[in-house]
Length: 499
Image 1 (cartoon, helix red, strand yellow):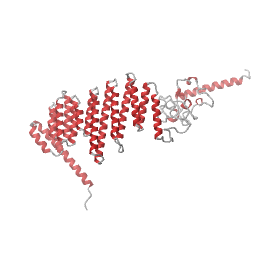
Image 2 (tube, one colour):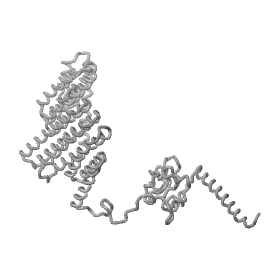
Image 3 (cartoon, helix red, strand yellow):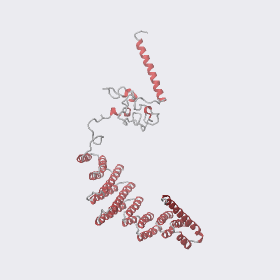
Image 4 (cartoon, helix red, strand yellow):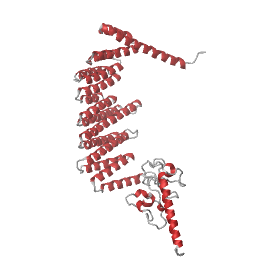
């Protein structure tokens, strides 16, 4: 062999040997991953993002949940600003000065449809190195005028968008941002423009999604308007409430244009319930102002008139809900909110809008209980009678038993034991009646009225059923004695010894 070619042959042999060694090393690395960490603070290139590997480098599983660094995390390279910048990253990933990205990479890793193989720092936009921008750490607080200017610019940019669906989304986001920032008038302006634009969309799923989002944003806006109306230093409260009423009606109209019946019913009922909820909040504030002597008689009358208007609006919108299941549930909730706000006439009005007997009886029972707890005994009695009559008209036996049980429980809780004994006859089954009468007798004895329970048992119950009811009276008496003894022990424990 020629001596001049020996160095070249030797070099080829060495390169071939090194290639075989490197291939075996790579195969071994794939089959048996190394457990030691890389010298840098970044993960290695070995993660596939599936979470099934051992996680080369900083001990990740390949999911990116543990450290959120390097290419072995989620596979996007966006978790860390320093991904792939240190010595732990393979050499062919770190371009030299003037080198084109991807130059020198293996052919099978140079696929343009897999950008996760290149760190985000190399392919993303350059970092901003100028002065702090609004929202960045260290940025100065914007003045009120600057916020107003920025808000107007965002609104104008949103209105310039040509695609209606994109325009609605931009305005909806802007409205939510304005609500969060307390700029409620600007939020109203954005919502109005979004509602005008959403009508340009064709009927379908996309339009329904945008309508649901706008309705939700509108109810969030009304909550902010009511909070503003209830602030101590608010000058014209009624003005804010009028704005809220207008937005509520707008939200109801938006929800009413949803083509899906179930979704339409849900969103309209949400608007109605939101009105009753905010009305109860106003009532609670009125009570607080009254206790602190911060409201005059004329102002209280004006507040009560406003509450009646809000509950009437809630009932009106709820009556437009197409599906019974949503309409009945929210009507019952409106009745409860009305009772808690001391607007009993509106609460009864909401309950009586329910056409089905079972849910109507349940709603009436709640209003009657509220009347009794507010010492309106005569009115409560009349509503309990109406509840019993409504429950008796329930044709399904199992449903009527449920309604009867609810009525009996409420009467027992109020201590109206005679009314509870009358209500047990709504049951069809004698065993259920006896069980309910036993609950009446036990609770009556628990409240120290055992002799009254024994009297009606001996006078109204057949002899063969008296023993079981007397046993329930004894149980209630024992519970009363135990409760009294426990209370006495607690008092003795905290008493100071006399000297």
